[in-house]
Image (tube, rainbow, N blue to C red; front, side):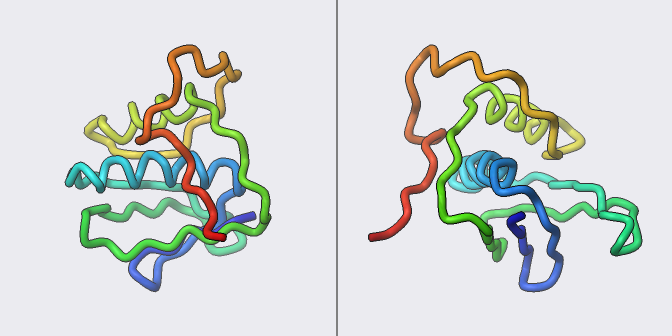
Length: 117
């Protein structure tokens, strides 16, 4: 279970695979200078409810992964998440669709970051 930390304060736990896909979408939008809201549901153990943060190029973000293995990327899931991020309601986690394969080849924007050696 990974963690997403926003502005050194707001944080939530997100499964590593989902976190990797969210990171791809978030960094792609911020690289293009596109601010957007990001919302998630809180676990009942921390009071439940929903949290929304305003993502912008100056945001301080941390993507902390529990596992050391980099998950494979499901292009369809990345595209589905990007669709929500581009909507008026902003980014939120949607269920992973079946992986239909790469189909059109990866772009730099959709490649997972490589760990440093």
